[in-house]
Length: 82
Image (cartoon, rainbow, N blue to C red; front, top):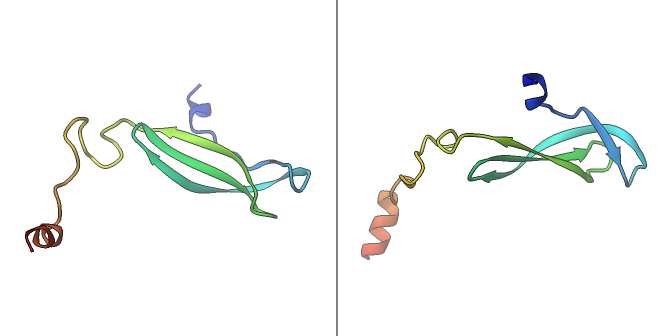
């Protein structure tokens, strides 16, 4: 079963080209529980599918759940005070 948990498509059916063609995988979104990838047809660039890779909540940025992200940068703090 582990082999199918990291499945990546090499070719998918493109409705615009009306045939199965190679696809490119593009990072689409960072989600709270993983990463979403978009599959694009190499011939015409049409989106033909997505893939979600689940990542533990602390795995994306090294932030523990409920901890929040890093505080504002020094530059942002100076702008707020001005």
